[in-house]
Length: 582
Ligand SMILES: Nc1ncnc2c1ncn2[C@@H]1O[C@H](COP(=O)(O)OP(=O)(O)OP(=O)(O)O)[C@@H](O)[C@H]1O
Image (tube, rainbow, N blue to C red):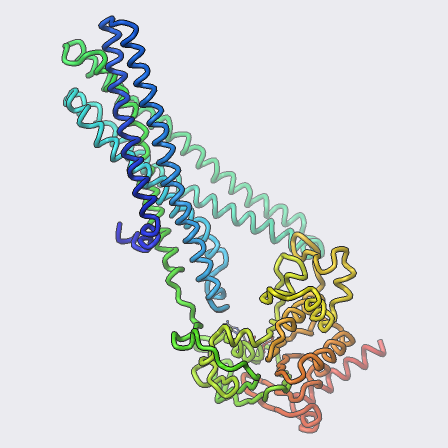
């Protein structure tokens, strides 16, 4: 089992001083606890021998001193060991988050967010319990039992055998029932997350539920899930209600055995009343550590499984990362030449892009059009290396893309993804994401270029308006333009807009394109669009069909070529004419 805890070694090493102090306080705490029954026993013997008040007071003072010492050492033990477990939890959580941040988007397609969240919460919690309570209670049990046993055996070996017989049963009971309780608890937790997810989806999708008149059906569905949750919870309550009485019964047997056999020892004058009392106190003191032992075994089992799961995430190497030789090299600033050379790209076995040869000279703009699912997003994702093409298939400024460090490459690129994502912070923070030193004037300027500034300034809190659950909901078009402002603020050499104008009207689109032309002078721009009105403003247009570039040229060239682009143009012209007539 210790082998399975190997991943924790570096963390334990970091806090070895704390753990050593913790170990020392465990020993000192148990030493004080061991002395206490002896003092009580001595006091009782003194009382039964009718010694003077002074002696009894003396015993009481000693008892108090030892009790205070025990309390202090217990406090130190908890503070140091539980504190160290929290520190390790903190380090582990940071390391996990940092490693998850390095993973490419594909990682999040392969792993469910819920699973990752569970590992970073439940599993971390299990590891913390292993490092804190589990280590502390097992150390206490081992030290106390080892220290108390010699005293107890010296008092009466026979009594010790009888008194100890039922104790392992208590420990075993806690362990087996604890395992069942945990299993049921996990099922309840899973059910609870289902209920929460159902409620959350109903609240976020409130509009859809109302529109489809599904309120009643959803209430019924929720009630069914809620009923199942309660049923499982009651099963847990029953199990837990059984645990304590059974435990008390088993431990009661042990105390009865001690009383019976110990009483006989006293009657037969083999033990004094004081010694017998001390023995009884040892037994009572041993009860909790024995119970804890069963519980600790469960904590260890759960904790080791969690350590393995967390370690899998920690060892997950980011699929897209700098080669060691490249990591710290800084090449001259990116100019913005992009070249796809004989590019073929697959998701698993499915070939998505085929034989693509395309050059986008620095300072020019390229529009990519094509049917849905033809591979447009895939192609542009290769530029900031959100996806990785085979070596030598993508070049920036004539250099294979992998020769640029990811940091330098991505710093030079402004990327507006197809699905806009805004953090639940202020609009200002959303726009200045990744450009911490941006001044309010620069943020506003970017917003002006993206044609969103006036609308933002009309909100009561202006740029400080919160978006998302705690603030206002922006419209699809507003979100897209905020996202464009975010990309522009980086002042990138390469700007990529993946269908980023889809949610704005043609009038706004025109104004944004005009501003972009100004902003992106001398920089490279790629925009994916389904609209000819967007594409025609680019220096060149590439048509991607079924993963192949089938046409390239200017708007006029492609119109006269009479291919896909011309068809698209005619269709959209017709749509516009119909819209005007209607
Ligand atoms: N992570 C992925 N794993 C497997 N297949 C994928 C993945 N992402 C995209 N695809 C597939 O690759 C193909 C191209 O997708 P892509 O998003 O590049 O198309 P697109 O031209 O941008 O489409 P649209 O215009 O609808 O946005 C699609 O068939 C899609 O189902």
